[in-house]
Image (cartoon, rainbow, N blue to C red; front, top):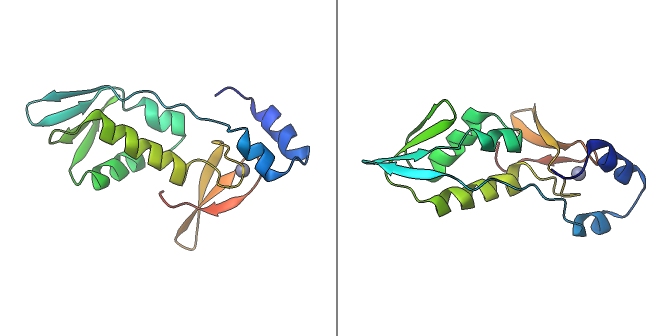
Length: 138
Ligand SMILES: [Zn+2]
């Protein structure tokens, strides 16, 4: 992350219109998945960095990946192990999608969001602009 929380807050307060802020593209860079195959398993060696970067619960992110890849997965320290041979691009795409649907604020594009549960629905609450949006993945 390149911008401080204070800077984001002051930007939000300064009353720039939403589109202007969105077009600046506050970006969250994800690491490149480090994936190797051992037998019929896929070892995602730097998995632990992703939930940290996304500020999401490791087990939930893993559950999302396992579901989308239609396989079983488990965490072993910083690594995640998937049954079957899965390629790196699949992980990259799914994690990008997870970030878009469940992390980035749809109003201002900030990655500084957290989840809140209300009436069995998950909402993304943006710490930069205060918007509450339904999280498509949680
Ligand atoms: Zn926002």
